[in-house]
Amino acid sequence: MQMLPAGRDGVLVQVADAAEAVALARFARAAQVQAVEVVPGAETVLFDGVGDRSALEGLLARWSPEAAETVGPLVELSTSYDGADLDAVANLWGTDVAGVVARHSGIEFVSAFCGFAPGFAYLSGLPEHLAVPRRDTPRTRVPAGSVALAGAWCGVYPGASPGGWQLLGTTDAGLWDETRDEPALLAPGTRVRFVPR
Amino acid sequence: MTVQDRGRPGLAHLGVPRGGWLDAAAATLANRLVGNREDCAVLEVSGGGLTLRHEGAGRWVSVTGAGCSVEVSGAARGHGAATWLPSGAGLRLGPATRGVRSYLAVGGGLAVEPVLGSRSTDTLAWVGPPQVLRGSVLPVGPVTGAPPGVDVAPLRRHGPLRVLPGPRLDWFGAEVLHDLCAQEYVVSPRSNRVGLRLQGRRLERSRAGELPSEPMVLGAVQVPPDGQPVVFLADHPTTGGYPVIAVVLGEDLTSCAQLGPGQPVRFALG
Image (cartoon, rainbow over all chains, first blue to last red; front, top):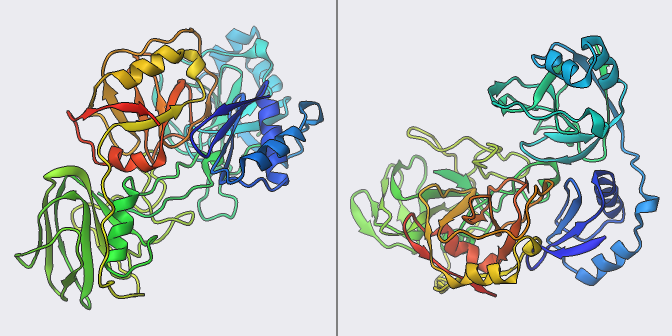
């Protein structure tokens, strides 16, 4: 763990990977860290609006990656595997469409961090050997609810937007709702399973 | 033109930009001038040029930030001062003559429906109330105070944008931070509420490769592969994949709000 400067009131903590980042963010929130923002990234956690830096340092000293465990709630997303890139992914994985569905729906993903759009979660859990490239040409419009892969990340588009990820299917789960107490369905730490429909 | 207040900090982990007024000093002054709490929603007008008609009981209004003429029913009024806007009167802001963003406060504050605790319109993800367009009607809240006798406009600090070393200075090396502070940049016309985009001598990275997506702070000076720095403003994306060489001090972000295309900019170590 390494502390990097991020402005007068911010500290960016470098950790080993996404699992550690989300675990540290959850640990810090549970310990009621005094910060306006606690934001996990792919290998970092930002603490911004930190009032008392030495208190934060004390908190970080009490955390160890070995104790890291992700015990967020489990969300099951009923998914139609009807994406435009199923065949392309099947080719990349050396299997057929049924093989893609079986592998993808067999993984328990974890929401590592959000970005790109409100409620867009980067889901970790895909093994590195199943990582897929982004499409050479991004689509100008990806429909809301699209379940997609890029690199070793899985994501679900909360709203229609341009996108370059490989599309596996769609879900009609409400991923983002500003009127809910918890507007993002897949907040960092949430465990996610895709259930074929 | 958008409604802005302090924004919605605390939601970056869900991918929601904080948003909020770019020139906090000017916006909060506008509120104080009309007797509002400092955090009331105001109208942020880029480049000036606005005509409004006021319906309902008269209210105090004030215009701060970028310099522009202010007229009530055709009569000239002061900039940076409380002005009475009678029922049925027209209010006109001329084009901005100095600076970019003017702030219009109305006694009682703009009362558009808040989203996630804020009335700010975020122009990156479009969280918040819709943009203000020709024909928009803006509701006004109940008056909570009267204009104070005297208010002192904060002194504008002129000079370079002060920076602290950023989290990924090691992607460049200390000499590149000196290069950032040694040259004069020009504001790009592609600047907006997301970022102040600058043009100058290319900043070279000392290492190749991709940075895994990491959270970004307000004021981050991000350096994309073209070597031209971008200062992240209120509507910046919550995560980014380019290294941050430095971070602009919060007090100097108000200067960023008022820098227009073609203007020179310098950085200095804060």
